[in-house]
Image (cartoon, rainbow, N blue to C red; front, side, top):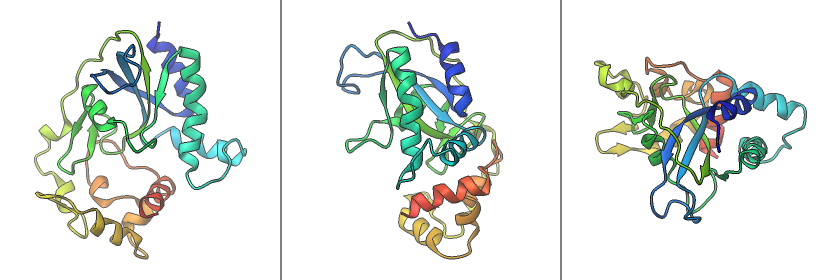
Length: 216
């Protein structure tokens, strides 16, 4: 039996948080006995210092994707302790439907940018893993989308290259801009995300790390 308070205590030292629970649908897990999932993620606080401390102590060997490696090192033992299977958003193809799972928790909604928005973390939500179990889990009370009460929607007018438009997200224009020298998106994080009044942005160091991974 999974005790959610126990899971929260295991995640806390690593700066990770339980986003919410969701029901698995047909075909989402190879093992048909798995019926529920627990989404694990991070906001703008906590996770980055824990990750950097492990890197500095050489507990996370340097490689091309150190955050993915660190996530496995942290979540793997927790999954074993709870008797859960584990899925990661970076494993694939095929990739697991993490965005769909996030919305199914009732804690994350689609934003005007197309990114998931969390009622507390805003657009600065990272999805790190999902624990999959063979038991029904209580759902957390669903939260309304913060975008429903945002009249100005500054996120839509802040992108320097207009990458977010009614017809979708122009990833190529975004990546080309971020790859250029001396721009604020690359050094401090996406300006459109930073314009959102919900939550607060990653530190410049963490934002630069993710942007470097984005442009490859």
